[in-house]
Length: 101
Image (cartoon, rainbow, N blue to C red):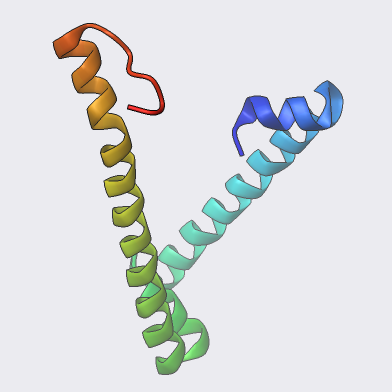
């Protein structure tokens, strides 16, 4: 969800409150990650899970991070596939193609 769509769907007051709430939650999760990094003397999610829950959780966390990174790569490839024809049309041919092209 983008910031303008939050404000559009929730209204100006509730939308801005939702954005502020999201910012607070994001800041808190960042502070938790910093705290984990200091206590474990590491900067890897797997080490955080190992210290908190043991070896099985560390391996599960490693797999989840890999799956998440695979999703990022797939999203990037999809984005590039959608954008490249439009960018080429704009810069080479000088027009924005229709959605059907």
